Image (cartoon, rainbow, N blue to C red):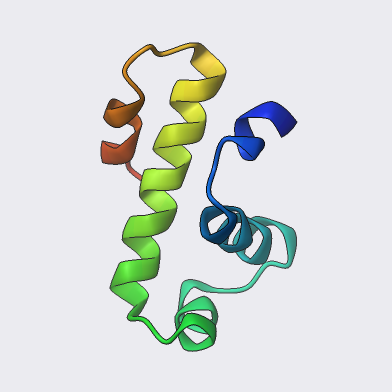
Length: 70
């Protein structure tokens, strides 16, 4: 997992830390970064997709950017 997280950008790692580590809501994160809640939701979905691809050895990393996040 650390290796997969290390492949994310610093911004992506920060979103993951706030959401999963600190338990902030998408709305709270949106306020911190000056973006919409929708933007945060889409970013988190893409990040989860990327991580899934990294962890499952998916050779097409772009596929991960289409991942759902609920």
